[in-house]
Image 1 (cartoon, rainbow, N blue to C red):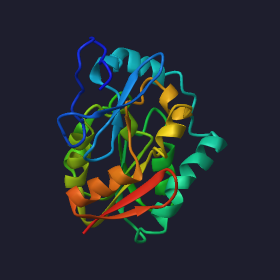
Image 2: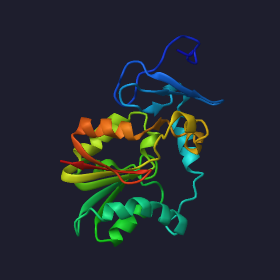
Image 3: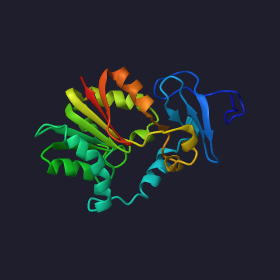
Length: 221
């Protein structure tokens, strides 16, 4: 086992399934990465996580806006398969909507009732105590220090038959991981794969569709 940052032969536990000893996966000049032998999550140990202030400052550098056509095309990759699976009118939550909740606006224009929440930009937690037909979360789960807790909380807010739609890029292989642009973002601390979502669907007893390389839909059975 490679030496952990403090020089001891140790490995952190998985933040998703809590398996006690993950395997070393990769090291670059900034961080170490481990992979869980149980759920296949790849993650960054806690000592490399940014402070909330530094994390917010990094997000503030993003230039997404409500009128950005490129951003709308990007979100359409998630919105389109979701809209194909929703009834005519449904209630939804855009979890982690950021400062420009364009996806919520797009879904409202399609006839759905939307609430929004974001830890830094729309921190009113009122919506987190309601029930929804669907919850959508784009480019959020890779930022979560406690992914299972957050995902379980969201799952409990979904009505039977409802959908949890996640957009996050998937780990393809260890060989490609080293040159993957996704790990260059210092706020990205957990990395899911198809195997991870299979584990999560089994844990939630959910239906699972991996619609593309970065859009995942879980249905509450």
